[in-house]
Image (cartoon, rainbow, N blue to C red; front, top):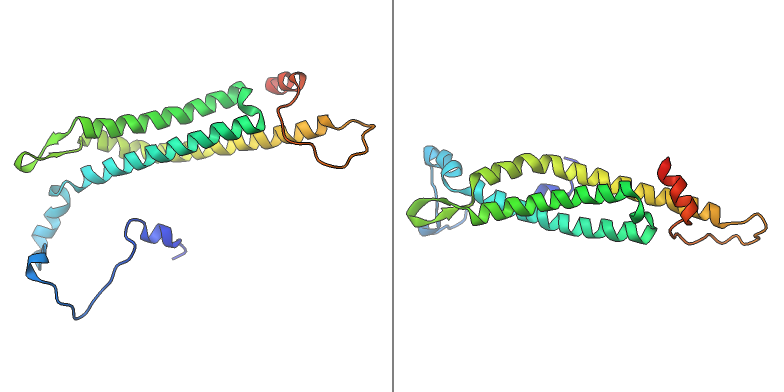
Length: 187
C-alpha cells in the first residue's frame, strides 16, 4: 500500500499462513478462546515491555543523530553560531529525556505475577506521549542546521573569490572569516 518493506515488516520479518500444518499442542498458546485472547494484551505485560524497548531504541538513535549533527556542524563551521548551539542542545535534551525514561522504566519496576516485575508504566506512557513530539522536532532541527551549513558554505565560497581571481574551482567549505561570522549572526 505504498509503504516500504521496512515499514510494513518492522520487527516482523515475515508471516507465514499454512493451511495444513502440524503444530504440537504443547506449542499452542490460545486456541478458539476469544475471551482469553482479548485479555492477553492488557494482562501480558506487553505494553510495558514494548515501550521499554522502544524508549531505549529511540535513545540510541538520538545518540547517533546528535553525534552526527555535532560533527556536521563542526565540519561546516556553523557550530560557533549561537542558534545552532541552542538547536544542538535541544537535540541533546530530547536524547537525555529518553534515556531517563528508559532508566525509569528499568530501575523503578512494578510488581507483577509470581514475583516478576514489569517496566514502570508511568514512564512507559510518558515515552508514548513524547516520542510523537521528539522525532519530528529532532528532524526539523537537523534540517535547519544542515540548511544553515549549506548557506554558510555558499556565503564562504562567494567571499573567498576575489574580482582578480581567474580560478574557477569552487572554494572549500570552511568557517567564514570572523567579520562574515559576526554580520551573519546579526541577521
